[in-house]
Image (cartoon, rainbow, N blue to C red):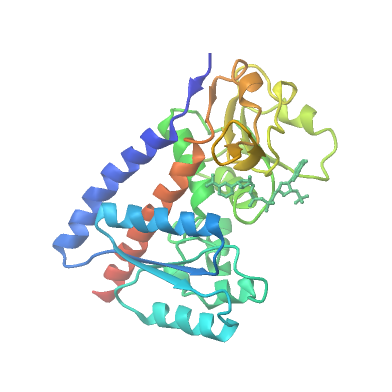
Length: 296
Ligand code: NDP
């Protein structure tokens, strides 16, 4: 039986540490502030924004939830971002993805003050990650995967990690993070994607598999060697008549057949998901600390 890597319990550990950091900042008269901007009515995005707001309040952070109508123009949104960039009570800004079609998301990300870009999507923060400059912000999901590995005692140094997926949100930053020189890294990383030949042969050589492709139950027993560690980032809806909602959420990994082969594995839900939000809180506290130091 594989060790079950519990994202909820690990996120709680992160929160316990963050509460200490937040208390220290409060003692200096500073409260970390996060602004989450949502344009439009997408129900999944709304749910994400609500849970981020709830977690901020739970930790005693200053939380601003800006819910803008779907008709909001690019100029209006840019003006809002500019306002938040200038607001000294806000240390982190997140614009919930995906925005409506008429919004140029890349231009919005470019407009963010990199010092407040707690999602780590601004080119300045992408560059810092590539350069190994730890003052930047790393996207929350890959950062959460790395933390899960560390907290679960998985040896990363020297391990062969195969990352499935090359998005800018998960796959690419995940690979950069684990191939860096230094603590919690030093892995040998292979990235596979939709054009990769012989994908199962490659994943079978992995000590650690990180699946982030958005394909339900894609990673099967044949993709995994005995004793591998499997991190499942995927969140996919599959029809389920037995469920009240008519669907259920599953990962990119066929858990039932992979779990018996794995040394350790994350469930979906309850694996990577809770860590993503924990890392958003962590990045917000880091942003606050950096901005408070710069003000002194
Ligand atoms: P994207 O759709 O942006 O990227 C998917 C990547 O997977 C692409 O690089 C694509 O290859 C590759 N891919 C797709 N199909 C295949 C295939 N059949 N074989 C090999 N590679 C394939 O997805 P994201 O990175 O944004 O998200 C991935 C998954 O992670 C989704 O299920 C998403 O919901 C989930 N997610 C979960 C989060 C969490 O907090 N737990 C946060 C963010 C995402 P190519 O580049 O060649 O097209």
